[in-house]
Image 1 (spheres, rainbow, N blue to C red):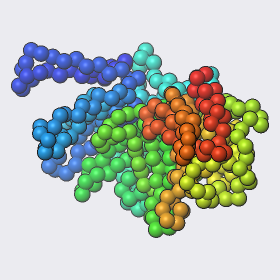
Image 2: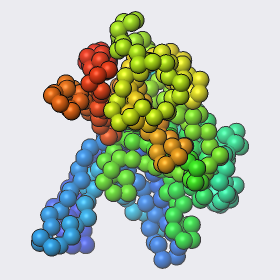
Image 3: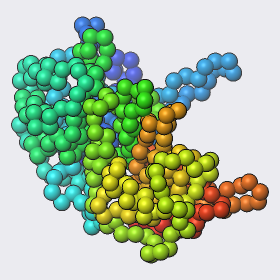
Image 4: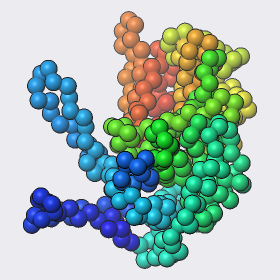
Length: 424
């Protein structure tokens, strides 16, 4: 049952549903962090599905039966819920439209006092329009898929908006596609409310999952350029869910080389997840660590230990080429570790990971400070030990960074994190 406040599951126990024991499970809409629908496949597949991801970890790992036995597969339980519908008996697009109304933010007044985007879900006393559940026009979905085609390319947002607002009404009335890309059979769309993925599966391509991740569920993201021999660039999303095709909270989508502007994707994700909150510095002017010389090349090789580098030079680089930072964002500390870079800004942590022999495949990962909940530091000991810091992130991989004993001001980083995390 889908009510104005929750999803209610009624499970009658016993054989053939004839038992007297009944289980009632309630999931408030506020616990739903992603959703989707999946069409049935070929003639052998009799069920379509509704997909629900929640914000709590209920995954169960069954014990092994013996020492030599492989571990049984984990069971998601209420961390990920699949509801089977009889094929052709349920209007999947109508279900998708209803879930969009309940799980996506209502436009207007969706930023808090600090400029953060907030979920701002539809109030329970605001009914969903009956038009949302109106039957989808026959053949409308096939028409959209036919328009998308199978070749890899960037999609025209205006044309895509017309398609997704047409007979299928995949997008809400006040929702618009901003960036969209086609890679193989899959489609990745960034709207003003969500990340929308059309995932074509199976040999026949008839089994299709339509997945939606509201921006309020995104905890970290990364874009990765293609290398010398790679044909694909990538975008990675870490969300506030615990099961995504198995235990884990990462979504990875390939994008064809030269077909996607990964810096534009990075900038748009930053706007939607970080928002426009105050980008003031946590450190007073001149309180950063000692400069380690002018940076002549952002990704030059500096050795194996992290060395503090000039924040103003990194900020200048990251606001021009590549344009990673927002206009009011300040770089407070930056450390080079071999070919990689760790940057602490007034809004986030940026991790630059240079990969491969050529070093041309580069990942830019963003961890918003708003989702950093705890941190610790180890000062340097004797001999070869180095100072280290670890930041615990809600819903994404933790950040660990070694710092050079000779040139890093550990307490500057501690002050940045204390100012941004403890005063949230």
